[in-house]
Length: 148
Image 1: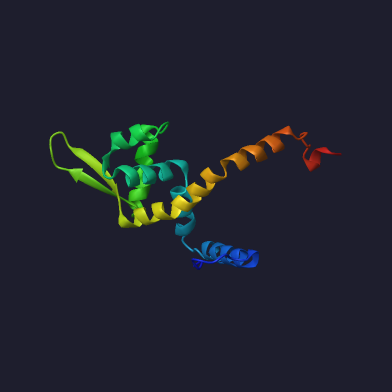
Image 2 (image 1 turned 90 degrees about the vertical axis):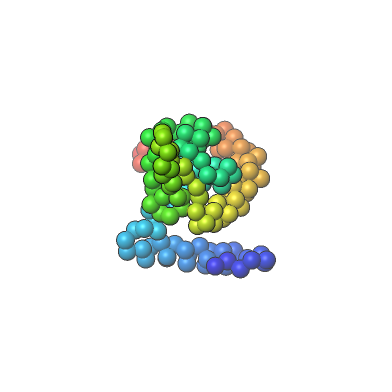
């Protein structure tokens, strides 16, 4: 765990990063990598954000708040998040039947941990644009295998 309240040296940061990578490598059943892969994807983060901001919602309400997600992809994403314990599904016994979704405490914990990353991206978006412009303005280099 990274200690709070102090600035880390480059070596300390690399040491913590290595410890995390080692933990992912020592994952016999692959669950850590699977969760990291799907919990960090565009749609999962969108669902986690949407439920975190708006609370318990129906499938269609989540979809309306997430631009570009298909119904099929939203269903797959919700099922995976439910399987991993990040989202709870509520089947309401009424006519017509309704289903609602809500972040679990664990899912809220993931949201809280993602906020610093999102904040960093927003705060540095101008630098990303500048870096992309610089990269895109460079002459394109041929891959090393094409230089012969």
